Image 1 (cartoon, rainbow, N blue to C red):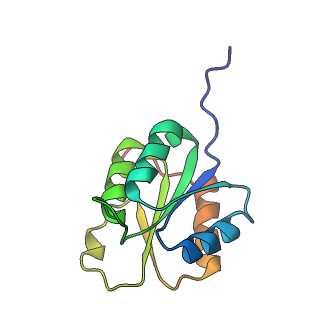
Image 2: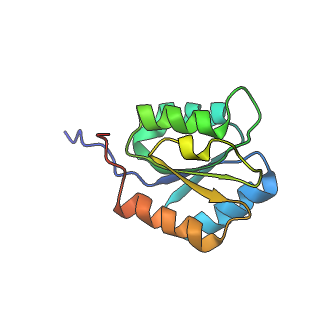
Length: 132
């Protein structure tokens, strides 16, 4: 019986703007990653609870509807799924970017597709170390 975990192969997009979410989805579908999309941090956590071991990358907006924002999502994901590459993005000026967890990369909006693809490549080739 094979009890090995599957290789991470999912990019989870967390974005409340449907146009931006579709743009990110179209971009990441050009990679070997499967793409899942949700519109809130709470929905992302639900996905992670079910499939966290399969997620290679989270691409999330900082400003999200609901009780959690992208930074809180990133902190939870860094703690519970430390090998996932986390990329946060925002078009607003955000205070405290220097206080983001070490496991987080920040790309300002409007982001360039190449920057997102570089992070997707890193998610596959250089997963985060599970040991801080």
